[in-house]
Image (cartoon, rainbow, N blue to C red; front, side, top):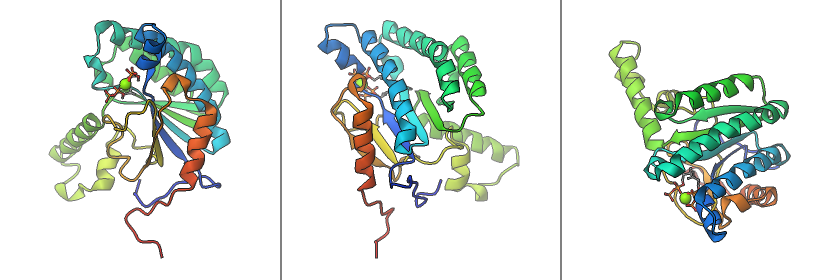
Length: 244
Ligand code: IPE
Ligand code: IPE
Ligand code: MG
């Protein structure tokens, strides 16, 4: 979507919020528990935030669950996370369906376990008629990886003669991204106090507003979410122009 297409709710709140859910490991460490304990607590938080979206006028919520770099973690943590994603889908599918949530996944599915991919496909299909909240889960997602895959597919279309180099512009490239059906995020929140994007939605966040909060993800409440959404409304988005 064009960078100047400012998306806000009637109250000036963000329409698309993207969250880098960080700090699960530290949350567990503070309690002397294994990292996976933190991931489980983090997964429980997702439901509260999804449910808070309609009240904030947030139509699109995109959450970073596993990055293309997270494979560098121990085998125990990676397989624990993959098992958690499978359990999450099983446990939450019904509630997501009845609460009007449409679920999508972005990221490269090639490296994910077949069974998990089948469950992701099924959940996407199951919720495909919902429209209250569009929840997008970034799993094995990396911004550079996404743009690279898009460029590769674009090159293939050119090779096949369906497009020419003259068709290559930002709009065309966007159509090849995993997020092609989504508007760009208006607000990107990162929890845990780290002020970096860690390869999240690089292309799409060109003009997003950022909010870095110190709270560790398992402690991030709907109240804090509401505060951050409200602070977005007070921001002056200029998209490179000068306000007259
Ligand atoms: C974010 O929490 C969740 C994932 C990356 C899967 P972390 O696991 O990165 O938690 P910290 O940053 O180590 O505290
Ligand atoms: C980003 O957090 C990825 C997710 C939240 C899924 P990381 O914890 O992996 O990022 P770095 O390593 O601190 O940059
Ligand atoms: Mg982290």
